[in-house]
Length: 59
Image 1 (cartoon, rainbow, N blue to C red):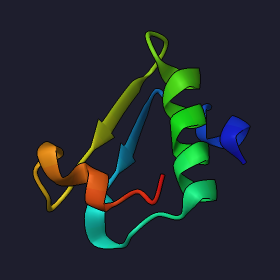
Image 2: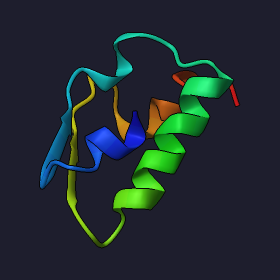
Image 3: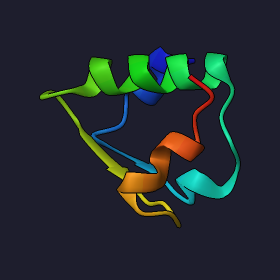
Image 4: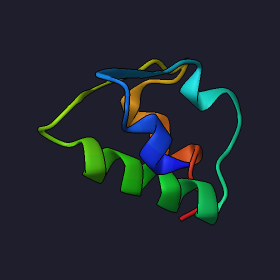
């Protein structure tokens, strides 16, 4: 699945903080960000300030 998402020049994750993420989801998101880092664009929108993102992730 991550390889399919990497086909887009710009990937947009909208309403990111809408639900809490479990450990597996957090790990997949981290992997996605690492794969795209300095190669392709990633835009994340969230209804919570960055300082509160620790409440979104379980790990």
